[in-house]
Image 1: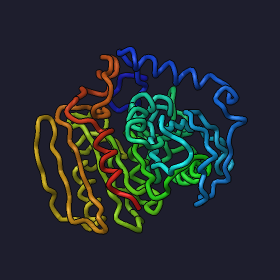
Image 2 (image 1 turned 90 degrees about the vertical axis):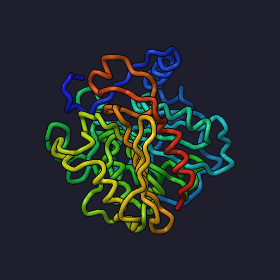
Image 3 (image 1 turned 45 degrees about the vertical axis):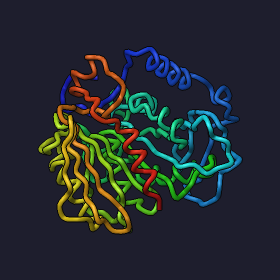
Length: 338
């Protein structure tokens, strides 16, 4: 990691003991063979989405999977809640890391395992494949990488990968196909914004964190509920836009464009509280909603995330505990199914 503000990287470290133990546990899992994780061998998937139920098949434990999708081995960390029994279909949340980061880093950075345990859903952390420093970047259609770099020739279609990943996980775990959601940070949030357009029949709602976009064209076939979070002092992806080549317009413009896409009210209802400006578009088609939380004074962060050391906040900007993104997005997800 270098110290330039243009970096979209998150390689988190924790100062609190529980966070350190979590990091150790994740890194230990990475080093373990699949047999030690309770997997007979790296799982494979054909890449075709299926409605077949995985209930009674998946293992009720957290594991790192290597799935062959579209002929390419891909990594995903899957955390199942402590109450998982293979008997009841649970919601599924895909949680995408930022540019130059990894699935393991996002697992720790977003701290969503705890939310999954508390609210009884499965969370999966897929990993991108374009090498970037010590991590990986997502292939966001039609957009350059951080620093204006072109996407390398032959890079995989990550929209297709993530679509097919949902089908693979539905085979392996007890998943409610009507309650599949996606969130992500920064570059992962931009990829999630694309998923909302391209896979609106699969993802019931999305929650981009520090990276909301409205791709054009956006071939969504239904009104997609969107909840977004962004720091007002984000120097990596500035709230007002005018950033890198992939970041030209403001977050408010992105939210407004989604509201237009979802046939919502033309103007949002705006409320202000300590540390937050909340904009909500109402009267959207088919019960959808578009909500935006602008966190005052926060940088390029995951709102309500664990305390970060100065080496990270110097790069990503100040943190705020004004809201907890995990609890707010889950409440939003729970109220929107296909």
